[in-house]
Structure formats: structure tokens, C-alpha cells
Length: 265
Length: 319
Image (tube, rainbow over the protein chains, first blue to last red):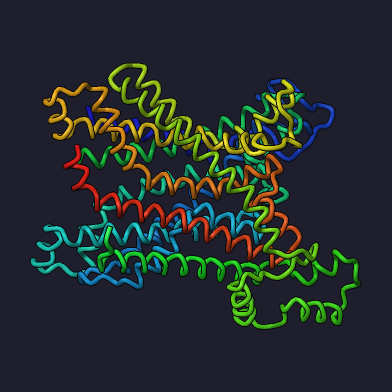
């Protein structure tokens, strides 16, 4: 009973996020197609949420925007999860020695928050989907490597890892079979919270004009468009910010639930 | 506090880390500018409406020092930067250091102002969360805090401009003097940060109040209120100071977006204009300054954390 409740509370945010990122499949109209005569149309059967300043279907644009915003974040996080965890386990010093120099090096790199790396890279290269994914991956992966190393080194000193070692398990087996499942929730939790931050950051960049590309729709860009036409249909501002809020909140909730789940074990 | 060997090593390591951070980040900025699709020399010629030929391009590149290999450029830049010479902007030929300093003054004011408001709000809401912790109102407050984290600061900032300034005519969009110039920008960070830390503070207070030391204070006949404000609150506050400093660093990064919304000529404005104008001296100097500030915030968090962990025994006796 308790377990199923937990599964449901984790499943709801995941379902919301999946439907926001794959909703574009069901978009009713072409999000790029303009109908000058039908601008600022109210909600109707053809346009379930009405149209924007250029007569484009608002719902289709929202769904298309979800693909870009959440897609980038999730793809980046997935790359970081796989690559960062692998590298972190690889670099984890399990022989008990501590490298002052490599520690300082890692500390130095991670002294800058991921969002700042994102700003530096997007700032210099300009924004586009591949740049954003690269920037996101690079800025997060260093933190994850550091996190995985710290956690793995801590676990390696614990009794169960020593016992596994004594019973003949190889170094590789201890790290992957015994330690990885223990530290995985914490890694996923960190990534979920980062995803939430990144959604806000990506929307922020698009909002101030560093949009993801000429033909890419994302929520931050829609927000800045709606803002310029604020007097005509204020609710156009409401839809994208609501979706930004919901998706960021879902990641936050996931992060919190995973942490709690771990505490119970 | 007399300096033990451990403290000296710690200080040395932290200094080394700041230097390393700055070196790494500036190298990144050089590599990124080099890999950037737009050539700075080409952009310079376009700006001055000089015909772009192989000859003029080569000449400009020589003048800008862009014809050297990347590592030579970097070492040249670094050796000058150490003496405070960041060169002149390719756009307006102004001294970059001066431009940076005036922009930095704007940004740091926003951050510090935001920090003060955040600290006050965290204490207020955190105490409120603690007092109402077992009531429905307490659950509502912590749910609201949780939701507040997901509201982007840039949205609050733009809504302030659109609704309060434009619609209601309070304040003005530009042309504010004095503190009003920074206050709205600073305030847009405050709800998110305060919402993040207030429940944390409440949890820490609850923990402090459940400690044996709090029980002893109760046996001494001290009132709950006195224990809370005299002992539990300071201890709980101290324990969140390191993360608060890290949050200030995050605010600094976030300020770049907010400055654009309010058109404040801070570091964010500099980095954006440097990028659109392809002005490497400005880009490198801004990123250097950002890296120094961010790592200093981060290191002060580490230092405070160390001081706290060294004084824990002391505070136990004191309580």
C-alpha cells in the first residue's frame, strides 16, 4: 500500500513531464503558420487556446515549445547521468590516498555554478539547440563527476564494500554492482534539481533575446513575444509561464521524492 | 585564533583554488572565442565599414594580436592582465578595466542589496515556518515556499515593469536615480532565494530545539522563546550561512539576465554587448571578473564552514 502510493506520487510528475515534452505529436495546427486575419483570436474549436500576435495557434506553439525546453534539459541530463557517473566511478580513488592536487583542481572547476558556465558558453557562442545541449552537459558533468567521486569514495570505505572485497569481488564489480545502486538516487536527485534550475535558465536566455534559433519555439521566447503585446491578450503571457512553472516544479518534486525515498531505506 | 599548520595549509589551498579557477575559466573563454563562428577582426572591419579584403583583414588581425597562436595570445593577455591592463575595447577604444569597474559596481550593488533582503526574509519566514510547523498554516507556508522556487526571477522582474510601472504608473522604467535603480532588480531574486532557505532554516531550528543542550536550557528554567532566539536561532542561522554564500554566487550569475530586463549596465550587459560586438578584450575581462567573484563567494562559504566546524565544541559549552 505504502509502496504503491510512493510510485503514484513519483509517476504523476513524470507523466506530466512526458506529456509536456511529447505533446507536440498531438498539436492541432502548424505552430509556425501565420494567419494575419485571425490574430488575437479567442479560444475556438480550431484554436483551442486562441492565437497570438501573428495569428499562430497558441496551443500548438506551447506544445512545440515543450519539445525544445524539456527536450534539451532531459537530453543534457541523460548524457550527464551516463557519462558523469561513469567518469566519476573511474576517477574515484579507492586506495585510500587523497590527491591534494586533483582535489584542488576539481574544487577549482566546480567553484563556478553550472549556470555561470552556461552563460559563458551561450554568451560567446550564441544560442542554438546543439550549443545549449553542449553547454548544459559540460557545465553539469563536472559537478556530477565530483559528486560521484565523493560518494563512491565514502561508500568504498564502508563495511559492505570491504566484505565484498574480502570475498573476492573485483574492483569493477564492487563499484558497479554494489556501490552504484546505493549512490544512484542521490545522483538522480541532484540532476532533477539541476533540471529545474536549467529550465528557468534556458527560458531566461530566450526571454532576454538569446533565443535557441530562428525557427525554434520555446517558452521563454513565447513569453518575451507575449510581453511586447501585453495589452492585447494578457493571457498569452500566462500560458508559457505556467508551463515553465509546472515543469520546473515537477523536477523539484521528483528531486524531493527521490531524496525521501532514500531516507526511508 | 592562532594559526595552526592545518589552517595555513587550508588557506594556501584555498588561494591556490581561486587562482586555478580563474586560470581555467579564462582559458575556457579564450578557447571559446577562438572556436566562435564569427571572427573578431571581420566584425571590427564591418563596424568601421572598411572593405574586407585579405590584406585589411590580415592587418587588423596583426593590430589586434589575433594572428598569434592561441597560447601566445593567452600568455600575452595574462601577463598584461596581472598588471591590471586589460587593453582597450575594439568598439569604443575605452580602457576595459574602467568599463569593467563601473559595470561591476552596478552588479555588486544588486547582489548585496538582494542579499540583505533575502537574509531578513529568510529569518522572518523561517521563524514563521517553525512556529506554525505542526499546523495547517505551516504546511501551506512550506508548500508555497516550495512552489516559489520554481518561479523564474526574470518573470517577476518583467511583471514588475509591465504591471506596476507601466499599468499603474508607480516608479519608472528607466531614469531612476539612487537606490531605486537597483532595488527592483535586487528584489526579483528575493522571493526565490528566501523560499529556498526559509524551510531549511525552520528544519534547522527544529533540530536545534530537539538537542540535549536545548533540554538543559529548559531545565534551567529558560523560556522557549529565550532558547529559540538566544540559542537555537543563531546556531541554525550559522549552519545555513555557507549555502547562503553559494546562493549569492548563483544570484550573481542570474543577475546577468535580470540586468537585461531592467537595462542596467552591469556585468551582464557588458558580456552581452561584448558578444554581439565581437569584442574579445571586454569578453575576457568580464569573464575573469565573474570567475573571481564567483570563486570568492564559494571560497568564503568553505572558509565559514571550516570556522564553524572548528567552533562547534565551543558553542556546545556556551549553550
